[in-house]
Image (cartoon, rainbow, N blue to C red; front, top):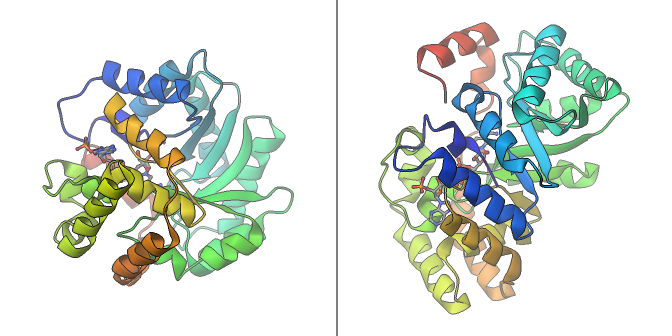
Length: 307
Ligand SMILES: NC(=O)c1ccc[n+]([C@@H]2O[C@H](COP(=O)([O-])OP(=O)(O)OC[C@H]3O[C@@H](n4cnc5c(N)ncnc54)[C@H](OP(=O)(O)O)[C@@H]3O)[C@@H](O)[C@H]2O)c1
């Protein structure tokens, strides 16, 4: 599961901290044991809520250090603050949220992350939003530990990693953690951009007009007797990814449980592959933001109230 929604800033109103915590616990009680958060979600609030929810449960915690907190000192400080908010001694998976700007040596950052394993602060290192050359470079930079995962946007409506890194990741044994696996809800049948997360997302807008894909997804959901969301999540699993859908309530979790249980037929997977092939065509958006120095991203993030 993804816990951006527990930061509240981008995901609208109409749900509470209690809703989120009971959804997470319901999931943990039904075999879902992986939850992803980040220091920037709600400026730490998501980590705090995840920390409260996991108390008493044996689950795998992933969080992220912002791509602007990349000096050795800042990384150590961020990891310590995340540990405190999450209430854990060791973070299972610590991910670099996005590649640092071109003015920073990626190897220096990766080596600082390795030191966190030496200190027992984190168990594994992951990256996020890494594509193409910078993905390969980050992996090469590691001298003593492996990069175990790359968390990227991946769904039936965003398949860019298939062109810029999926083969490399498979060869290197790097797990693909799929964020926005429901295209921010469009693959669960939501067509209206009713919150900030959706309003700012061109992928959501484009996909919400794709009657062909969405009608077929609906038809398949009826065929398998599950929700559209479950079919969309299962497609990612069939592709070898680990989807982390953002959930707010128990009803959302039921779709995740169903996704673990259904099996899609080969002809249905092929149909979904074909209908979504066009969503491989986005440019690698990660390249342009790397021209902007980290401190500017940091200032902009705080001026806009964070995510
Ligand atoms: N690394 C990164 O840069 C990055 C970026 C984005 C996200 N993420 C991570 O990935 C996670 C998931 O991505 P996301 O939150 O962007 O998008 P998502 O999982 O594609 O969509 C989440 C939204 O879909 C709706 N939804 C979920 N399950 C549903 C169901 N069963 N039935 C109907 N609607 C359902 C909910 O919408 P409503 O709110 O309308 O109920 C929910 O807020 C995040 O929580 C975060 O942990 C990481």
